Length: 283
Ligand SMILES: CC1=N[C@H](C(=O)O)[C@@H](O)CN1
Image (cartoon, rainbow, N blue to C red; front, side, top):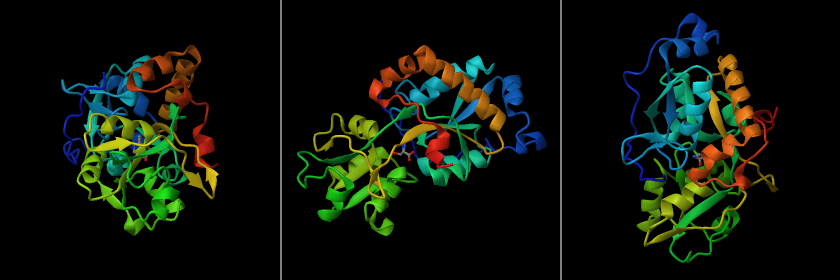
């Protein structure tokens, strides 16, 4: 199920851009349009297990699989991937390159100023990829700061903020395109750690002879543990689509099907959550 990630570069979505209809801009009828088209375009970031293309060329991951179930219930039969870098997901969504972000994106106040989120479908701590044996003993951002570790994370990742909250200067962080580049940077010794979601770190380091993932840990904000939950993101005008999506998500959660969809991707009951987007947006 967790088959390898097809190589993604920073694929643009050229050719996918289209001009929003007036009603699309004011949030009127995207759901109706998607129903008529029979297809919804999902922005993904090539990250196992969240959203990726498997070795057979098929779109999968917790978010696309959930999207398939939910959009079918909403009357949209097909999903179509639009791969891009994680840091390009919000700009791509707002530039109409795809209809929804299906990449397990954390709901953060900064992002809530740019997009609207469904409620989180999972919660997750961070972890590091470090050299085998963890020679610097890096278990948290505070450890990494104390040990003057060279820290890396991915473009646009929430972990940039987590590291900065712990005292790192943003300009001292090495920002790489994705988790595969992060693993390579650790393996080659260019950096001491790559910070990611715990499940990303675990899965990308699995099988590496030179690197391993640390135990999961919760990032701190203002000295307090930070709750991180990942969700689908929509353009700010698309409240009707977001609300319809949310209603189906809640039904799946209540019936236990949400967990059944997510479990094959390495999620456990500990990662299921009742956090809301509103709570995580801070409003
Ligand atoms: C699924 C995911 N979440 C984090 C974020 O939302 O920034 C980053 O670690 C990138 N990948």
